[in-house]
Length: 158
Image (tube, rainbow, N blue to C red):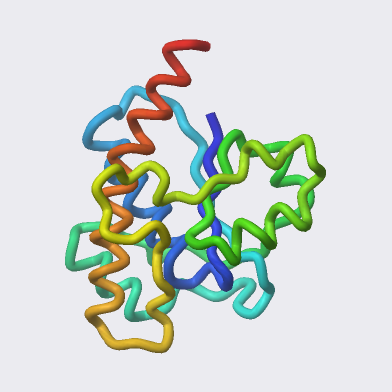
């Protein structure tokens, strides 16, 4: 199973999602082999580490995302990843615009997996203050639980 988390620039939301899901997987299903990555729909920050505010917010929750580096979604990603999890509808639309139609079913809104979340998207905290990064992590943690259930269901069927 291969998962790709996607936001616009790959320095705030998607690397945070990657870090959160890695932690949830390590804690709840350490024996499950899953490839996890993140990328951005745009090339603004390619090669850069996550935003320092995202790093600090994640660190406060015991998640280390310092080794991650931004990259842009490539055409190969659509065939390679089983689920491509976008942070908002804008990114879903952009991914579907770029992806061959046979891969559109792999592109999902991450918050679909958060049953009781107050939002259906993960807001971009880039232009806000520290509380925005905390809200993002709250949402990602909720979505990660439902996503893990989906991943485990798929693996049982396989």
